[in-house]
Length: 62
Image (tube, rainbow, N blue to C red; front, side, top):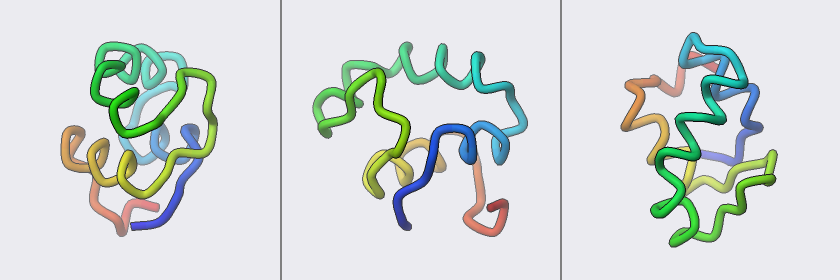
């Protein structure tokens, strides 16, 4: 996994950026624990791995 922009992950998950942001806010507690701020656009690999697992995104979707 490598760092990804939020809009890339939203597109790979098949949802709008707004819906994706809402999903992120629902998981804010975990995101804060791994060091992701709500306004951060570039997500670190650890966050990308978690999001891909939770939303069923395959790395080949990028």
